[in-house]
Length: 248
Image 1 (cartoon, rainbow, N blue to C red):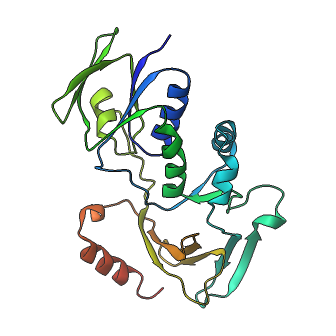
Image 2 (cartoon, rainbow, N blue to C red; image 1 turned 45 degrees about the horizontal axis):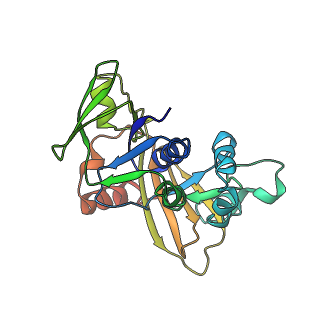
């Protein structure tokens, strides 16, 4: 029996759900608040069940082909000298660097393209209200449209507003007491294909990771719960991180 299904969130989980459900003969609509598909983001290690899902979708090799090219992980000292290294090819299984190491946006696009063949995508809209009467789910969108579905799947991130609508006060984002700045910088001649990780004092760390786009993915991490820094403008965030890491 075919069902009418709404999926909210056009990232990895949402596109995967839309692909499988439409393939099974359901009428699937995917709604995404962004005005168009977003392919930004940082590294993802695909292991275990995630890799098995890609294999069953026939996308495992395509994901490997779009990998970042990261060869392993090295820990370095304050002079950049290697003090420990794990090279993926020398390990029996995945180490800190997985065999399938891919950027979030590249994986999301790999899933988005085939998902479009069976599902309807609605960009620039969000779920405003949900009424579940145990028979059908009535959904009111921010655009003003109201439609009913047999099933609604909320495939959004940790700060999901839709999940809060359905399960109020039950959504702990679990920030893990970490404040992390992610960004992309140009490659330089001394960059290699290893993930370079430096631990500084005061619960701070820095890492540089290669990608397959000719740039380097960087992050600065502080072991502390966010205190609203994510809402600052970029200039203030940069000044804050520059001050915190000045002696590292």
